[in-house]
Length: 110
Image (tube, rainbow, N blue to C red; front, top):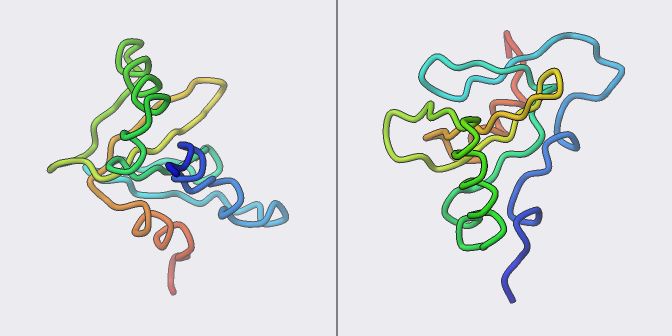
């Protein structure tokens, strides 16, 4: 049975730093694009989620509204849903969701 898109995405806010840590942390998505980790809503595997009609419709709608930003030098492997000041942006990244999650857990100097 196919999984729903949310099950194929890393629901990000659960993986981000604990709320008591007030240090602003950033995540590099590719092509010199860096975003605040606190604004990342989800990181989804592009191959797995685009098999779902709901995910395809979501990405098509985001593309139509101009809120998709391609930061991949090569074929994108993931898409990152990012929210800042009430505005949603979808970033296409050549990095895998596992790599982005690993990067999110790494702190400077470690």
